[in-house]
Image 1: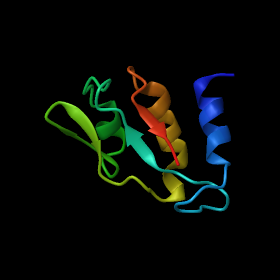
Image 2: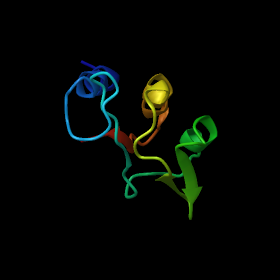
Image 3: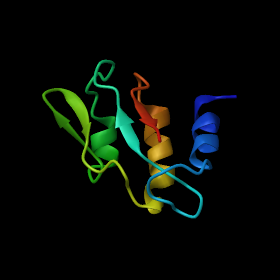
Length: 86
């Protein structure tokens, strides 16, 4: 099972937070492993920004319409620093 499949399975869990028809998203960036490559901030400037060479989350609970784009950014992140959590 690849990383994206695991993330999609996670998204189907019912946890506290915003409920998007059974989909829950809380975006987290691991500041210790982030390389500041700017892929996330270029593709989703509504959710990510680069500050002091590290990605920061501007909107940790984005609307459901961002789900596919978020999964794409998670897959493209070279350091694997972006995750979706409870």
